[in-house]
Image 1 (cartoon, rainbow, N blue to C red):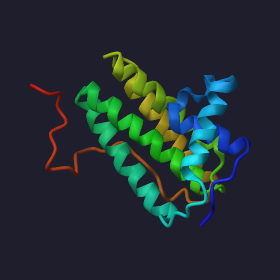
Image 2 (image 1 turned 180 degrees about the horizontal axis):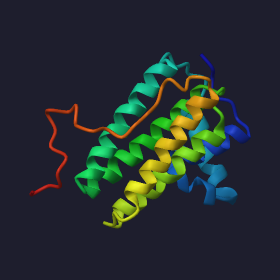
Image 3 (image 1 turned 90 degrees about the vertical axis):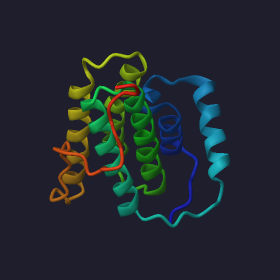
Image 4 (image 1 turned 120 degrees about the vertical axis):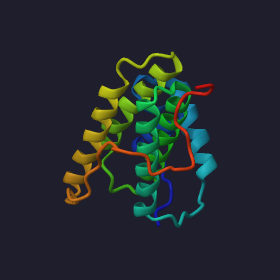
Length: 168
């Protein structure tokens, strides 16, 4: 497994992990300080989780985000979007062969989804989720695994969770 290394990629990914798609707007010493804190927390530890396992977590979070968005459960949408971006950042940190441009292409609309949901707005969420899904599939195509095609779920595999907003 690879260890975390400082540099441009580490800086970008640390900012991504800390701020979702909004990392593009991060600048100056605050962002660099965040990257340094993140690098110190990762240190020289080695991680044994496989890329396939991380992608499985990402797929599950994508499903939950989609179902929460369909139910217009904005607190759950914000929660799942945040977790999804954290997991995307983890995959990119642990596996340097994942092109950062594809991570950013997926994380940016997911960060916007989180912001929309936190504001109690949902008008753009479905389109943003479609953009993120398309970015995932573009990455799979670039990695020559286009046979792994992500789609929005048609039904919930989570029989033990109600995705409707609280109190409904």
